[in-house]
Length: 506
Image (cartoon, rainbow, N blue to C red):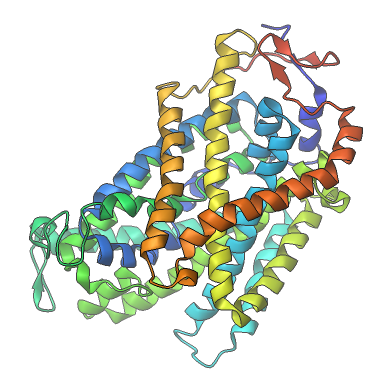
């Protein structure tokens, strides 16, 4: 296989980065990506609307997330790059699909970051009700911007300690919850115990009195976004000291973390209080500790919510800076996104995203309803990114099986069915978003997810196609009209390639 080759342009986007992320950074980035406001806050409304069967929803989507991470691990050990999904789409499907992937990922993080900034402002008002939200927005953005501009290691340090805080909060809850549930202690006028799984109003899988039998299945379309950001490991891989050693460990640990942190937490929350006690907008952990008379723990959870939001902001700036530079290298983003600091930070792309965060947070304060639709549209970026990971893994393995590319030392099991199941699930999520969106309100403009799918997808598609028509001449000039994938079924698509040694097992 030593004669296998690829165009050297694949490595151009990696020039300038420093491999400074160590083992503890990688492990905690992987953990932190799987714990965020989707668990600390978003699970409350889902518990209320779904009942104990939400445990099934989180577990099923967790399995899909594991399939995703195994597919991603195979890609990363095939070729670690800070361009991540954008670079893999360029390699396996061509420039147009790389362009779509990069900008969809950027749209997702840009809008998500705006929401997280606004959320930090609301969380701070838990202690200081009169503190102006715009001040919180400026301070929060300044903190994560400085961290990201320093170095990749500074980003890793922040994520390490943010993940420590999130994990510690969950572990404390799990420990307290186990004691309370196993000891069948009283929480207010309710007795805790695993029997609540089936004695909860409506039973384990409620389907009467306002509940629908398909509720736990339909809610999966929302649960999937609670796991968003676990793919961050791929972006960080290009700056890891030893990606071949650390990525498999991080990926293999994902299923256990999902089982313990997500499913374990939901199991205990359901066992401690009736699901009707959990209300949207209030962390279920705050609710439980409040009923136990431990209001100070509720304040701790409130602080962790701020840490989780700041961590999301930090990850958003980090990943969009790298993705924008990958697009910039291919002439698919403004030329200034190529600028890097001496410490290996693509600072121009990071600053560009932070400016969008700032103006977006102001817009959110002025027109929250319009922004809500935009935020739901951003969720499509997550689905698109996950879809590209499955699609790239399928193409990579097909080329490996044909002997065109050396096998990755960390191949995903169950090929091709795990990736097919993953892609089918993502299609289901889009359909479920439309259906649940239609049912959510009697008023058309209140049917947010329906609008996002039926109007948002064609609109975003049209805007991206318009953008491609604008940048295509530059891409053609940059590549010599080589817009197709790097590989054909017989070998490199283009002649001027250089030898590449096969991947080595770690």
